[in-house]
Length: 370
Image 1 (cartoon, one colour):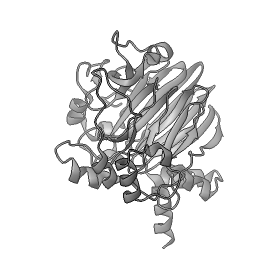
Image 2 (cartoon, rainbow, N blue to C red):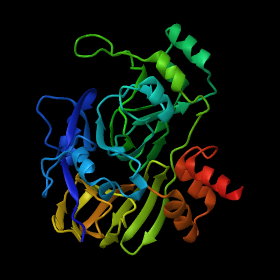
Image 3 (spheres, helix red, strand yellow):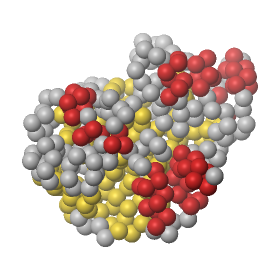
Image 4 (cartoon, rainbow, N blue to C red):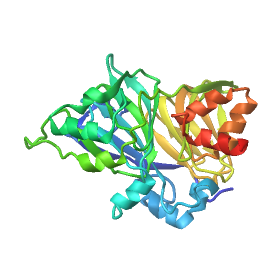
């Protein structure tokens, strides 16, 4: 029996110019009054644990004490929690922006302590006409982009605009120019980073009447100009005894699955990686083989972190629920071999990693074929 147990956290709310109150009305989050809240950071280093013997500690403090018992062997190289899980609601468009990769972050923002930033979003709700902007809509180079900005042009004209629907998954790899439109509620999982280079902010002013800062030169340095007309991720769905299980996206940083549960679901981290569950519809009860919090009620919008050392858990829907499950994968075993054994074509597996000319799943296939 593991000395650790499923961990719940106090959310950390962030106010943004594009935020509002929908996280309160949809997910029943206890938002601070009179603030336009855009993001609820559900699991990251500084979230405070709210249950069990570790109550009052931050996640980072718990990791310093328990390390691999929380992170698992797949996360043993990290000295902190390597991901950030968020719930986000947009009342206005976010800026058009870009994030560096790990190497660029280390060079350009060495004092930040952040990695680069690859992220994924799963659209929980999209109002009619909602958009996601990502990748270029034509071949563009740095000089074209720089001259367009210098001439006062709006670079949004060069960005691909995609209709966003409830249930869509987008993988935004570092270097990809992107932005999320108004009218969205989504779950986001990203690398441990808060480095954002804004390129265009819709010519709006903040509460002081000034435009927000842009980061044009840094952005131009980290953009991947080969990302032209990228696609939404096409999930791979399987019928399981507990319901439908869909692999949403997979890369070396994270694996995210969607579980539509009508029956009890069980899993065992087996020491490999923590599991993170986010309830996006309905509710349920989590049972685990742990000395504390062996039974934990999870409601809509709740996120729980199950340490890698927990010896198995069960989630019982009440009476039906939809859950996102996140973990650090062994891409070969957990994705390629598992889905291949279910008869899933390799091209469908590869597409879970985004751009099939260079993604992590494709790289593994190329390595194994050589």
